[in-house]
Image 1 (tube, one colour):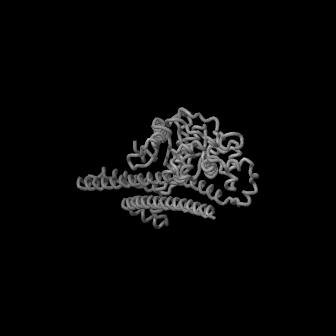
Image 2 (spheres, one colour):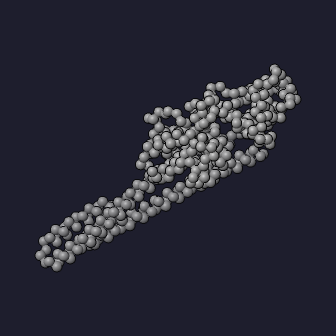
Image 3 (cartoon, rainbow, N blue to C red):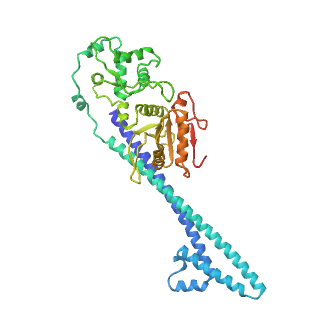
Length: 436
């Protein structure tokens, strides 16, 4: 019941956040459209008043013909005003009385100024309308992305939950070696490792040890925890099988974020059976095994896991990983991490980047897709400072001329205790709007 209540709470929270974002966006759009309409109506009214002042007879004839000046388009009104101003200028040049000529010239000057002012107002209204249309399109694209995330959340939450009976039906018989394991002197610590990996799907060795320490109320530096993992990977004798193994294909040395890559572990089949014996449940899928299918390399997968751990530690809620989002032009965008900002409640997309050579041709397309889906709010997690600077340059070049916000950080700096000077957050480089 506790699990089900938590799922309902999370689903209600995600639905509420989505509705608030959609409501705020629609309200903002309505206000902008109303403002643009008001400016246009004001400019149109001035054009009608000017033409009526220049030619009252024409105004009366239009009224009689049930086609008042207010029904004319802006272009028609501007043309008629131009014609009458030229006619007045021609008549003024033919007049012989100096005093009358001066008065007419002054009137023409005033009328010309009014017309110029009206033209500027009209142009400003048109520019504002274009800007509002652009903002509307951007908001619609972002809302479409958020709705897809919300739809996937709801579909996941409404999946029928397995009952204890259903889970138990898939359990294997208790192996003979379990009793030998349970009677061993290090069962408490080794079983803690099995429980942590089975319940949480954790793959990185440092993270597993940290969670074991929390569960056993020990220091993460306690050597017995490390020895317990080693025992699970290489039990003494042949009475207990290998329950945990290291995943092959991950280069441990030469991490671009500094130091060695953390060892990546997962439960063996016997390890999964051990978790079932301890809990009566099927273990959660290993996070590395789940993510490696969506990423270019084991190293990029590890950096994604590390980025997610830091975001969670900072209060962000992970909403999804490598989730496909359909864009308005028919293309797709797949953010590495989808999270909820703990301060604003907004959904953010996070890209994870390593300091390796990349195909520059496809980079601009990537950042443009990121820009559309995120409504110009780009969050990037890099492995080191060189990568962070290079990515900032890529983004600035790809989105040149566009207004966007970018927030970048790097794992190496965070490990060394660095924080942003502006607000103390994890985002070291923050660029807002049209800042250079």
